[in-house]
Amino acid sequence: MALQDLTPQLRTRLSRMERLVGWFVALAMALLAFGFVYYVYHTAERKGWFLTKAPYYTFTDRATGLKVGDPVMLMGLAVGQITRMDPMPPDEFYHNIYVEFEIKDPYYGYLWTQGSRAKITTADLLGKRILEVTKGSGGYPTYVFYELSEISPEEARALPDLAQWLLGQEIWDESGTNLLAAAKTPLADVPPSALNACTNLVIMNTSEERKLMTGIWNDREGRYDPYTRKSKPYPLVPDESAAVTERLEKLMEEVERALPNILRLTNQLAAVLSNSASLTSNLNAVTLDARPAVSNLTAITARLDQPGALGEWLFSTNINRQIEDALATTDAAIARADTNLTALAENLGRSLDNLADLTSSLSGQVQANTNILSEISRAIVDADTFIQGLKRHWLLRSAFRARETNAPAPPGPAMPVRSPKDSGQR
Image (cartoon, rainbow, N blue to C red; front, side, top):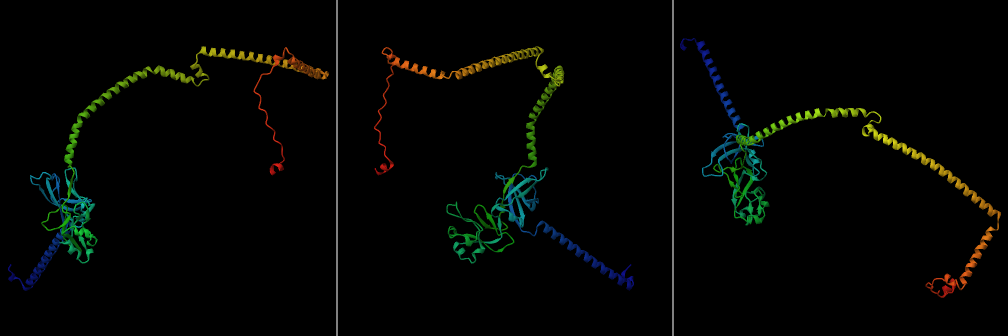
């Protein structure tokens, strides 16, 4: 039906409907565009498209388990991704694969010139590997975000506010062995001798920090070089571990080398088991032979609880009889010795009684004759007079001659006795 055939009321309603449909389509397109923009923004924020990224590179022996886009790990966190992997030229004999990667802000601040390494480790048992960087332990930051400039020592001394200017290089003495000033040292703290040791100085202005890298550390020159998009990334020392497949191959090789020893060990175990079986059979025979001895031992131990059982077991009947005869003989000898001792005591008593009678009779005689002691004394005196007369007789004088000895020294004159008073006056 043509539009002209409709009534004015229908044409009015149709134009309103078309207008609503147009507004609905426009609103849907706006919502779709907003959703698409939000998705792109959220994805870019999640993947760090708006963040500053610092480039690095390292080397690996093989690209097994690695690919472009794999995450780069730092302390268990995904802080970047691999951006490039190329084989080295054929005339390069030290390295095989060139691996370039990026570290997002602010994680590149953990990478310093000392201690930071690129480790390629195994991720799973299927050959997957990951690239992991380690936190620095010293040195200098790999990148700086301050404005770099190169001036003479005279211009450096004339700079205003020396505290905000940092040294962008290391200064060594002429011999190259003593460090006079380290990088990132404030110019106010740099000694004059260090400034006079160089012709030009690389300095950094810390008053303003840029969003992009302005300098990259040069390990060979010991200084920060200006960084541009065409600058070569900072190198990290590789630290690569063998893949799981290679480890499995080595393990299988070791197993193959160990198989002959294992087979020999099984043969030895079989021989040991056969010897154990023969030993058990021999042991069974020994136990059968030992049954009588065990039964005798059981009988002996059963009699040990009886009185004298141990003595009857250790000594024979003849020994018991001999011991009894010896004990009987000993008892008889002891009885005879007791009888003899009793008779001896009785005889000794009688002797003592006789001695007492003798002494009592002698005492009685002495008491009865009071002159006996004077007579004995007179007899002794007469005997002494007789002996003295014999000494003076000419015939017997030589028999009583005394032996000659050294005469004692004559005594000296006696000192007169004086009173204490006279001795004090003298």
